[in-house]
Structures are given as structure tokens and as C-alpha cells.
Image (cartoon, rainbow, N blue to C red; front, side, top):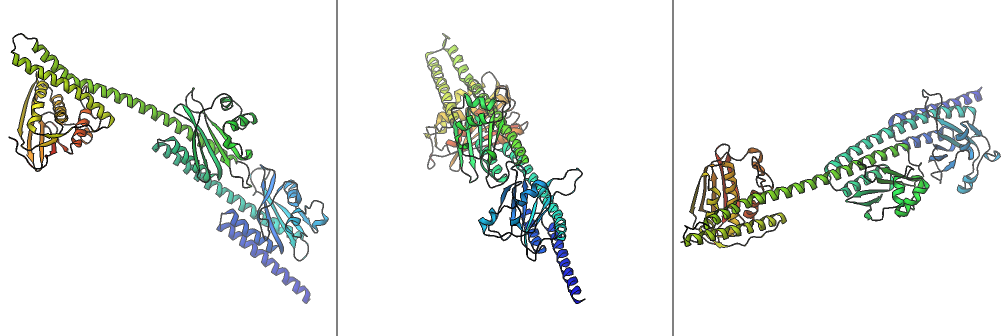
Length: 580
């Protein structure tokens, strides 16, 4: 009676341990979705529950026809990989049937090679399949195999088999949930990555920087070894390579022709043996890579005449399965982003080229427009010189005006070229405002001739200015010309000069319609204009540049319907000096 009681108590304790272990496994299932942590805990519980030496979970790798251990407790070998059908666990993976062996060395299916390599002695074995949780389909998929070795108090029983099968169903749930969580997490990462790529393509203009960041992100997310893009740019192909250490290499490919183009444009996949051999000949950086982990994609670009780009991705050889299908799909999506980046880059280049041509056309229009005034002046005074009734003094005066206008044309062309090249080309010298007005007055009179615009010039400045008279005359003339165009054929334009504190101030005002609000903040930028048939805005850009070169400043006051006033301030020459 006492022995029966002890036996019942022992069974009760065993049942308590089983319930406790199952409870702990259930808690682990609800507390973590990290597969490695979860399976590590479950394997410990199984080992204790089965009163065994060790337990190992083998996961199925269908792509390679292998099973491989994710966790091995108290073992020197931390990862074991073997073919399906080889060894006890391999046989369970092949047949899907439970195997319970009391003495391993008496069973011909047992492979003792691991024992020989590690020094471990296997006695009893219990090995069962792990099936995916019940689904709506008739056929369930095997996820892996649980193997328990060496029960300490004898052989594994049928009861042990039933308990292990019950736990295996929980292991299957754990694996499925963890994998689902990892897939969802990865999908979110992929969505974030594609969104980030779209932002990158939109804000970045340089293809190398775009592709470099793309490759770096892909290598990180897919745990790759090497990524290569071969892409067209400016009439030739370039290769950009990035490895997992961040080492980047960009080089032009000048011999992409013949066999390689046949391989690229062939209907056969790039990883076809014949195409692969040709590609490796031209891209030797890929020659030493594992073919099973190398993914090659052909990227068809927009345009019938456009040659395709290429994307190569080398997975990291760490014993993991070959390139997964969802990884391949992600690479295909990335390939689409590469195509979009190249397309957008070429559209931007075409737009920039169009803008450059437009800018050249605008500049030519401005040059012709600006040259018209001095040419008309020359033509007018040439007509006067042909008049027989004018005196020799008048002829001399008109000839001097013509010479000055020709010099103006020469200066204008040089000035525009200097502006386009970004050069500073002023020749300042100590000058008076009187000299500047004398140089400018004939030009302004000719500008406002044949109009009903009243011209007023007032010089009250006595300080000297360190300036280039020709360039400053050009500044004042450009502003006057803008005023004349704004006012039409009637109005009043006034040019005043007076002394300020350590400076000379030029005040140029008109009573025209005022500067439109939409361009007031951008008035001195190149090609900003409004309401002028032939205007381009280059004139005021030149004005600002010349004033800046004189270390001066320019300000504007304007009011719609009442006119505009420009204030130009130039520093006086050293100390104040009275000009007599």
C-alpha cells in the first residue's frame, strides 16, 4: 500500500512538472515573438520535462532539401545541417512519422558521425515531426523536427511521445506566429524603405548618391554581401558597387558592347549559364560570388531606344536558405525605383538643357534689346551729320556722341559676357558725380527722345566716389530704361545725387505703375521680369552685381499706381572732399 502511494505521488509530481512546463511554454508564447528566444526556452522545458540530456529543434529548409538546427542545448556544435532522409531526424523529416529508439547504435538508420565528432554518446532517441497549425487546406506543411536524446531514467515511453506531440503543436504555433510577425515586420520595413526611396528620388539629383543610399539600405535589410548597379549616364555606362562594409566603388564601363549586349537583351534570364559566363567576363567583381545566393535583374528603362540597366545582389553565405521569394519580389520593386530614378534624372537633365537654351535665348534677346538704344542713337546722329546746314562744331559734337555710343556697345557686350562668367571686372578710380552725369546725360536724352517723358537731373553731391564711371553709367541707364518701358510714352523721370554720411546717394524715381508685387522680392534675380514684351530682367541683375562690386547697396521703394524709386548708396572716396 505504501509503495503504491509513493508511486502515485511520483506520478503526481511528474504530472505537476508537465503542467508547469506546459504553462511556462504557454506564457512564453504570449510574452515574446522573437523566434530564437522562444525556441530556446521551449527546448529547455522539453529537455527537463522529458528528463533527457538534450533537445534539438531542426527547421526544414525545403529550398536546399535539408534540415538544420536552430538551437542545440549543451552541445559543442551550435548548428547542425543535414540532408533530408539522412540520420534519424532526417528520416522523420522525410516520412513525417515519429521514431522512438531505445538503443541508437542498434538501429541502422542512426548516423554516429556527430557522436564521433563531438565525443557524445547517444543512447535513446525520441524524434517527432512538427506540423504547421491546422489550416483550411487538406495538406499540412512540415515545419521541422524535434529530437530528444538520452532519457536519464530509461527509455522514452508512449506517454512521452504523446506529451512531446502536444508540445510540438505549441512549438508549431510559436514558429508560425513568430514567422508571421517577422513577415509583417519585414513588410513594414519594406514599405518604409520604398517610401524612403521615393523621397530620395524626389529630393536628390545625383544618380550616384541615390544608388549608393539605395544599395546600402538593401544590403542592410536583406543582410546581403554585395550589391551592384550597372546604369546608363551621359551616353555611357557606369558600374556602382557597394559591399556590406560600406566600401563603395564607381567606375565607367567603356567596353559594353557585342556579347554583353546580346546577353543583356537576350530573352533568357541573366542567370542562364551562357549569359552568366558573358556577364562575369565583363563584370569580374561577381566572378567569386555564390551562384545560389546571387540574384541578377534586368531593368528595362523608359524609351524604346533605351538600353536596360542591371541590378546584382549577393546574399550573405551564412548557412541560410537561398534567396527567398519575398526577397526577390522586394528586389524587383527596388529595380522599379532604379528605373524611375534614371527616368527622372534624364527628365531633369532634359529640362535643365532646355532651360539653359532658354536662358541663352533670353540673354540674346536682352543683348539685342539693349543694343537697340545706342544703335538708334548712332543712326540718328549719322543722319544729322549728313545735314549740310550743321556747323563744324555741331559735327564734332555729334561725332563724339557716336564714338561714345560705340564704346557703350563694346562695354555692354563685355559686361554681359563678364556677368555670364561670374567675373568681377570693374576699373574704379577717384571720380566725381559730375563726371558720371556728363557721361550719362546724352544717353538719357537719347533714351527719352521722341516721348512725352520729362527728364530731370539734379547733382547736389560734392563728395568723391571710388568708382568705374562706365559701369555706374550703365547701372543708372538700366534703371532709367526700365522706368521708360514701365511709363510708356508719358511721365516723369528724375535722377538726383546728394551726399550722405560717408556716402553718395543716387535717387532714381519715376511716376509709373510701380513694380508688380509678385516679383518685388526677386527683382534682382536673373531673368525675373513682368509685363515687358521684350524684357528678361537681366538688366537689374547686372545692376545689382555692379553695385555690389563697388561695395555699395541698392534699395527700392515702390507703390502700385504711384511709381518706383531706387536708392543706390556708394561709399565716398576716403575723407570728404569738396568738388569745385
